[in-house]
Amino acid sequence: RKEVEQDPGPFNVPEGATVAFNCTYSNSASQSFFWYRQDCRKEPKLLMSVYSSGNEDGRFTAQLNRASQYISLLIRDSKLSDSATYLCVVIPSGGSYIPTFGRGTSLIVHP
Amino acid sequence: EPEVTQTPSHQVTQMGQEVILRCVPISNHLYFYWYRQILGQKVEFLVSFYNNEISEKSEIFDDQFSVERPDGSNFTLKIRSTKLEDSAMYFCASTFNWDSYYGYTFGSGTRLTVV
Image 1 (cartoon, each protein chain N blue to C red):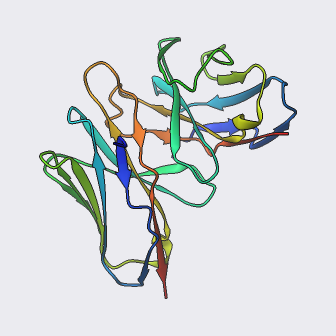
Image 2: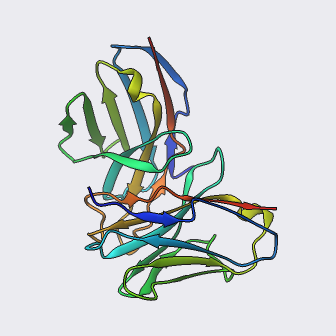
């Protein structure tokens, strides 16, 4: 089983739509979770950390479900500029802190 | 906003040659990392560095790779004898906390092409 799994998409949505991505992880001892955004041929940029209680930053909401071992990202009122690949990053606990990246979910927002 | 700087942005090298990729992490960060991303694939961890030594490394980071922080600001990745399969984007990143609570800040990357 892959350590961090994401639906590669692409998710093709119109402007203004709400879109949600999930990311599942296999290591139950994982302790830190992030969503990064990566534009084509650019570096990943931190979008938001994912807290246990869930957190919101403007149009973006992140949730963590430890029991089912997944995190989610919800984007409301999609903008053209949201078009990118969204990477899930999971960091384990217990001696190794090697971060594992998902392959990313591609989002295309069209007019 | 502080940033991680990487040079060069693109390097072409012949198979078997040595390359050195350079990074200047954010000045108050304590943990430094190299990642690579082969075109179309996921970002892969190579190595983490703290207190002037390697703290963790992945299976990819074999004897052909080494890292150094020679002068307290630069952080370099050396590939001794490049192979075709080393062609990738190499990202340097840094963070302040060991658990990267605030996430990593990535440099804009060096695209390495081995011919």
